[in-house]
Image 1 (tube, one colour):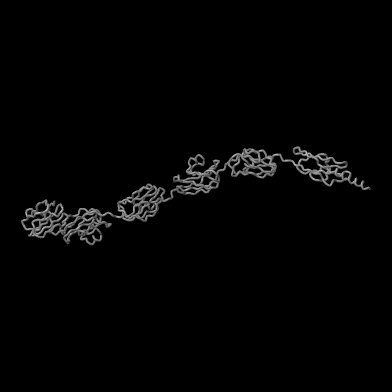
Image 2 (tube, rainbow, N blue to C red; image 1 turned 30 degrees about the vertical axis):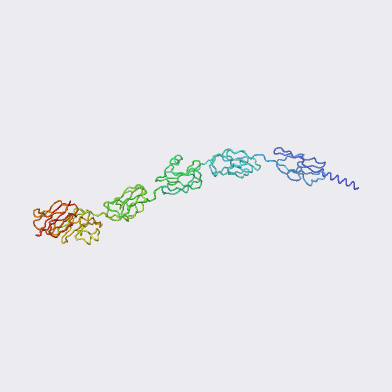
Length: 559
């Protein structure tokens, strides 16, 4: 064959093959249908639609093909003369956009208790959302407002948690993989119908002013109310002693500052006014012992009051030292008691108490007992008082009478003896045991002439004031009743300076005494006058001894 002819044959063959290649020339979409259109094959060539893979199907050689799913579609040529298939297929891609919203089903109807799950099913894969009622049907608002979500597998129910939600109305949306959004579900009311639970409540007893701790498992309020308060909001709010805002799981403190002594309970109330069960009763009691202050320090004279102050209302008790700090022993041993007003001093009598050591206790209205006071010695600190002491002069051998107002001993001692036990005991010349108010006799037998005084000493060694000075004289001593105006005369009776003596018998000596027996002037030579200018005004006794040893006495007044 000539070369030119050979070339033309080859060119014709190539052209024929190129013309015989199938081609999908157009796609026309109508909803979820796509019409594929092919080119026209040459004579002897048939184009067959191969669906979604390049095979050797011969059941559809139409000029068009209807596709209903998104996929790659194939068209292949068949040489009916040679009985052979083209080596490859023509292809095109069909894509259907998802514009169909998913459909919700089996959504839990309300009301639903907070914490319970809401169930819902979508007919498509995607997400299911729980949102507040009123949330708009667009993806931005839904994802912004969502309170719960779950991945959805078509026709498989999912659960949406309501834990932690506040009570209110909610709806459900389903969103598929193409962000198509379902119609909203019916409104689902999420309500709190579960009572809160108390925990960690302080057990009693507690003291007034102490805090009671309590915890609720929900947000809301916690109340302290008297035991017996009914579990309804009106009664609780009306009876509350203390309240506190509660955060779930966080302990709060309820003050007992306003509580009187008694039994109380705690309630928790949540935001939906559900009320917990009451706590166990909590006793508010006074456990604090009163405190004593300003207690009179000893020693205290028997009969004087002991003052003491308690910081609480109650009772004050005076008891012997050593009395135990319990109410039974205190009540049994008390020697004095008085009602106590807080911080006001009260007096405990010691009248007729036995001498000894005592302590004070305070007991409050809850029978709490204070610490004991310091020991207070109750003693006899009052000196006895002498009365009805014999006035001098007293003749040697005569008794001196004296009376003390207390039991004890009376002593006769020389004038000038100091009022202390040692000196009195050493100097005593006579003593007598006496009963209160009963005269005692002190003997002067054998005493030296001179001046003496009397002391009384009681059982507590308190010493009286000394008596007036008593002159103890001899047997011929001063006798105020033996005056002879015929033998001896004293003039003037009211003397200013010089007292004159007129006597029938010569005077041998003169002594002038005070009414207390003190010797003031002593003249041992014969005289007819006495210089009294140096004496104070008053009454004086003049003792005159004559040469015949006769003694006369008389009284004169010094101006």
